[in-house]
Image (cartoon, rainbow, N blue to C red; front, side, top):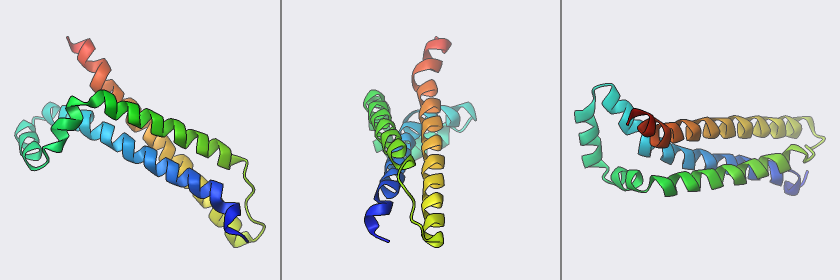
Length: 131
């Protein structure tokens, strides 16, 4: 079976992984600090920021972080929808691998969407509600 048959499915997996990475950036910039402070781990947060000062940059540029995350989610969603109609190979072992890749892509995409939504709530909605 040619590699071109599985290409859309692999692209959707890579798209979902990219969306998960962008979503993780949104979670780290906005959710992690809020949760740590809420749990009384402010000193641990200061230590974390001392070890990884890039987290401050992410928090200062949260609008860009979320825009990149949303663009990655849109690209991954497009790739997933395109791969959904792609045929799987006739060989049973390859067909099973194809179906497994599709399931993992959908799971990773769903985790990315939920993570980005939670990050959006912590970064933009909750501060407005609390003020």
